[in-house]
Figure 1: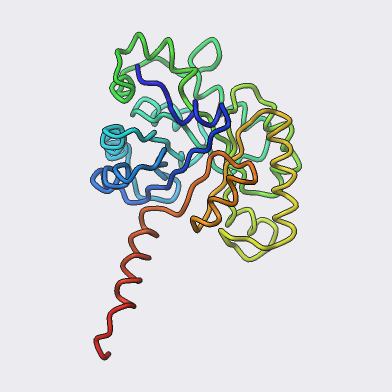
Figure 2 (figure 1 turned 45 degrees about the vertical axis):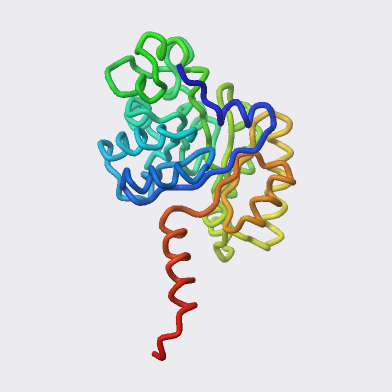
Length: 257
């Protein structure tokens, strides 16, 4: 059975860099995986991606040494179960604000006795290149459990959230976090309130030995975040990469119009 190299990297304090997938297209997923990202997160919260397409995206991603993660569209046991059975190596739950929500996520990701995930059919074993019995034995240790921090209320409860056994990492969504404070959304926030919250979050991650993650807009910011101690670091998504490259090319060409 394959080991979850991203979980191994961040657990030993090495950074893992990735991006998001919003196009519901296995070919796009394959091309992004071929670039060399450590992980790619299929975004079912904001992307028009159905379960069957997602499973095929996982299959193309794992042709490369790239971990297929997924953001569920809403935190619920059935949503987590279905994406894991489709072959996800990790689950990101959006907008976690309370300890109870973090506990729900962990229970949904773990087989009994550590959780309530049911044992059924799926392509999960193929995703890890093993058989079902081996997967059932090892999945609890290989699946990456991530809570997304994107609301100021989560910072008030951060010790309660990060102290839940089984939470491996948190991941900050700067746009929504800023919006929750009534600030202008940005992936590069300069707001003092945001910076203060991130200092508190990093300190809590160190206290509870949970990996800190955050989304960024530029390589410079990714590198700065890694220096600060963020180990699960992402940048943009497939749509933004496509549009920015196309816009740069279009703007560089002079046609006289």
